[in-house]
Image (cartoon, rainbow, N blue to C red):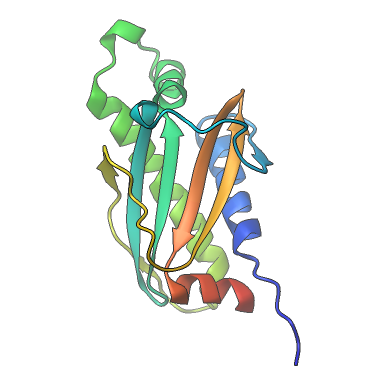
Length: 160
C-alpha cells in the first residue's frame, strides 16, 4: 500500500502566494503559526462553499489591520474614509480568487468546479466538527490563515 502525501497545504500556499502577488503586489511567506493567539475582536473572517466536484468550505481569517492597509494602498483612500464594506469586499474578493486558484489546481482536467459566493462573518467560522487543513501566512508581520474543511475536499488533496 502506497502512502499518499496530502498536497492541500501546498495548493493553498500556491494559491495564496499567487493571489497576493497578482492582486495586491505583496509577497507572502507561509509560516508555522502565530507566536501568540490573535485577539478575536481584531479579525475579519470570510468563507465560501465548494459545491462541486468535491464539497467543502474554504476560509480566510485575517487581522483587520492587514485588510485595512491593503484597502488604503489599493484604493488610495485615507484611513478615515474607509468604511466596513470596503474591508469586507476586498477580503471576499481575495478569498474568491484564492479559492478559484485552488480549484483550478485540484479539479481534474476538463471537469468544471462550482464554488459559492464568499460570505463575511463577525464570529468564528470554523466549527469543531470534521477535518480541516489550516495554513498560516505572514505579510509584513501580519499573520493570516487560509484553511479548508470537508472530507471530500481534503481527500482530493491526496490525489492531486
